[in-house]
Amino acid sequence: MTGIRLDPRTTPTARGPRASGERILALDVIRGVALCGIVFVNIAPLTRFGTAAGFYETPALDTVSGWLQLVVQQRFFPVFALLFGIGFSILLASATRTAARPRLVLLRRLLLLLAIGIPFQFLQPGSALLPFAVVGLVILLPSTWLPRPVVAVAAVVVTVAGVVGAGGGLALIPGVFLLGSALTRYGAVERIGRARRGSLVVMAVATASAVPLVLWQATAVEQSGFSVESAAAGLAMAAAWAALVSYLMTTWAARPLRAAFAPLGRMALTNYVAAAPLMLAAGGLLDLPHATSWAPVLGTAVAVLVGQGIVSALWLRVFTQGPLEWLWRWGTWGRRAPLRRVSPTAGRAGA
Image (tube, rainbow, N blue to C red; front, side, top):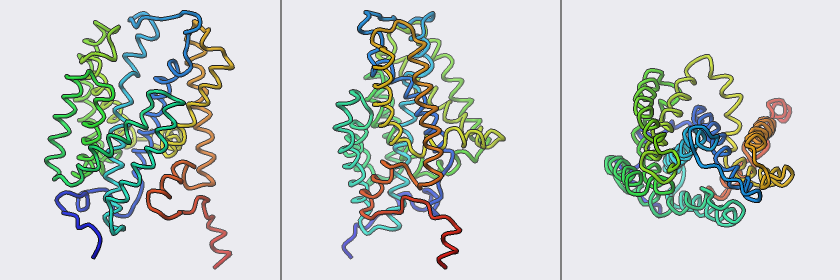
């Protein structure tokens, strides 16, 4: 046999994601919520808001930029990183069941993301795609040979080091990637959006941690993005956001949340990439470099997200995946899956 033999202690099979391949809808919703937050983070620097007018607003408690630091900056980026680590280990579990060389599947996936991320970096400097691909190749893929306890301990140590040593930002990616992988390999991901009590416990702990950390950050909000307090507050709030959505997915709110955010989340790569030219075009049309008010900036972010949500929902009525997701899957597995949905009536007609 030419395939790589995988040690069951180091791969997410027995306690990993559900073997049926069923999507965990709560993850799509959480991913969609995170995408919304990321758009609000990216739009001002991408459109060069206020730069031509010489407008610069120091983050403070009485400014919009200050509240963006407290509410969205560093709050949703860790969620995306966590979901990437989760998705990576879910893919490993699937590849272990179906592919002779499962880690080759993972390698192809990361190399394809690298191929997307390099040119996209020129369109949107500071994009997450390139560092996600690089850290995935250097940290996440090699970690699949490690036992689960080692990955879990490394996740905590590396994340704390990223907060304390670098003040968050890109330094959080390795640790949060490993955390997402560990959660999957220990079976915790199975309970997201299903375990009401567990979601409440995580939300309570995360919120109790976030409140003092955000208050600490608020004492020097102008240093946000470069400080231990902003990074720590961001991680705690990210956990609180994710746990809140997980809890709400066990209530009557699940249906409207799925309708509003799951299409965005299922097409997150397509929407993330498409948002950049949309925001740049809007920035040019509205002349945002000469703007001195946040209203058109935030309004543009809302318009982009609403438009993408509508288009995503309509697209997924006809197609199984977003266009970039479909191409990424094709390259990952080396075989082309159907893109257009097959209607039940068409199947019966051909029977």
